[in-house]
Length: 322
Image (cartoon, rainbow, N blue to C red; front, side, top):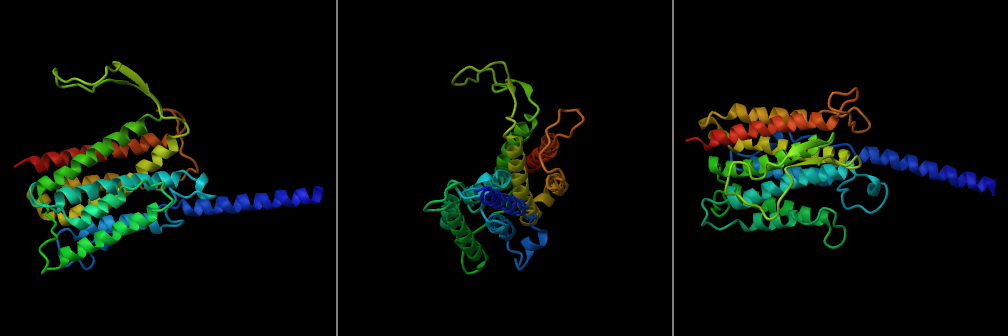
């Protein structure tokens, strides 16, 4: 009986080690998309780089080590949270870009019809990322990729005038406004890792503004210890996807950026987003106090995200000028 128990314990420990090794392998993040991948065989078609960046971003999430992990219900995936958080952050950025492509980039004016393939692709990207029954998240996202490729093929066909991509300053600004909101939220959540007292500025700047229910003049904000690493990797995933998209924007909106003398502003955004993808050498996300002995990875990430957001605001202002 004692020998049997030892065997069971040994097998259990072996399976745990195997599961840990697999989880470490599956936690390797995909590399950012290179500029060369966005310009290969594009034949100078406006919109090719942006559409391709969206396609490759979703493909890389699905085809990385372990595939799509957010909806897995079997070990070791079910015990992993960092990579699913990374996936969700990147997916949110992909959803935002798909929405803007449908509403802005592919339409010449407010009265024009939306592209059918983009509309269906955007709808499929909005399925719950944890869905594992029929339809599964992976199947819907792959269908979205197919639809985006159909749109790209029609856009590149000189004999097809239905699919268009309009690279204008006002269109780009609409997407940048969404980016500002995402980055601002990310920065606030990352900064809350150490806890802070925040003043209520909800109605600042408008004496006539009202809200549904009254709020306190200040409140304590602090991220749960259990959620600190999730917030960190969600922000890291969002920054990874946004880096891919900004590199594409640099190609498709080159003339617009040059006219507004805004190339440097976009490059500054890209530089800050590249910094968010530096290797995390610590085996865990550290959460030291602001000026304590131990590093705080969330505050370091918040710094890069805030700087990127400031650069996005500068770029928005430049594009808004005549």
